[in-house]
Amino acid sequence: MGSIETHNPLISDYEPAEVIHNTSAIINNIFIKTKRPYWAEKFEWFFERRWRSTIMLMSLDFIGVWLGIIAAVYYSDITIGVSEPFKYYIYSWITYNIFLFLYIFLKNGYSQIKDRRPEEEMAIVVIGNILAICFALSTNFIIRNEIVFSRHILLLAFILSLCTILILRFVLREILRKLWQYGLARENVLIVGYSAKNVKWFLEHLMIQRYSGFNIVGYLSRKGSSSKNKLRYMGGLEKLSEIIISKKIDKVFFALDKYSDESHQILIEKLEECGKHKIPAMIISHIFNEFNFTLSMDGYSSIFAIDRRVPAYSKLWFRFIKRSMDIVGSLFFLITTLPIWLGVIIAIKIGDGGPVFFKHRLVGKNGKIFYVLKFRTMVLNAQEIINGNQKLLEEFKKNYKLKNDPRITPIGKWLRKTSLDEMPQFINILKGEMSLVGPRPVREAELDRYGDFTPERCKMRPGLSGFWQVSGRCSTTYEERVEMDKFYLYKCNIWMDLIILLKTPLRVLRGEGAL
Image (cartoon, one colour):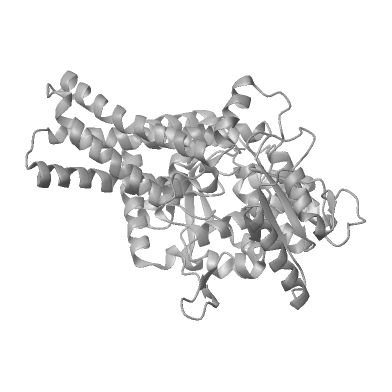
């Protein structure tokens, strides 16, 4: 893993040409900045080896744990007058720290941070801290058989430690994302094989997640492609070891097509070759890599079994927790945002005196039609404007969005930029028509764009926010939005929802993707 040349994009080209067309958004999204700041080049050192990342993460966790207890002790003394010597908590917090380290280590949470999605990171840290505080309390009561500390301080210390660790780890993830933008700390990846269809799937999968940690140096195949703008052809399969060494390859992806006994033997040989170089090898396959299937090995027969994945949304406990979050969250936001509601209502009325709310006919769970509420952001004759302009109508039918929409009022532009126009949707959430997090709300006419995925997509309530909203929003193509909805439905869990909810206000404040 290391820096890359600034002229080297993720994709130079690959056959067929449609692969380039469908993945051009990736190139634009991870455009490498040519001017690298001094701090970025130095910080890359921490991500170049696993042991360095492990030490860095353990150090951050250590800092987070002890900042939490120190802040809790002194804050309690200053604010509520609960004054106890810091030494009372040292033994319990050492126990807390040791157990936390052990749990995170066993969960592989000290491997390189780029190898985990954000929701996995959050789950490991939160569960680890909860178990650590329980273990620390149990140890204190059973072994030391004494209670010498304030429960208020202990609870506050736990909350502060947990929040500090999460903040430090996610700041680190943001730093790593910045390094990728400068072409630093990225993994050199080699593709072995010639299945353009599988490579296309692989690149699109990275694209919808906005993952830019790979630098694809080229591909090996029996013969190169004659088409223009292709990934760099590095030679035949026999050059695998040579390329791994000369290009400092970090990972190898196999994209074989027309699988046969011959290709199977080649695959085994090349996998063993990667093993000799201690390079991770991964197989890109539609069979193995489908969202809704899992691959496991039978313990007795040593035969791989492919099982249909049971999505979280079909599980009763997930639906119960998600609905509880919706009710509590919508009530909280409705109550706390009342002053903002009054301000927006007055502004709309002063603007043109028209209706405050706009009802939008959309498709809900199980295909049921409902009317989503929004603050009105368009002029009163909005439909006439778009029907009277063929160019605008064609653009609208393409993505159901307009880049420079002439129908939007001055106050409407600000409401959309800040996403305040969507506040009334908390009423829809409270009524059970929507969820805080879910797939993108769509019109009936848009369902055809989802194809065979339509029945599956309608099994969840549409969301006020979602994977699409925090991954580019209106700056994405419609095809990307469909894939993002599919990704969310098959990968969703409570931790992913929490990550999306935390990201949403940050995206809103930055105005990312808003029209």
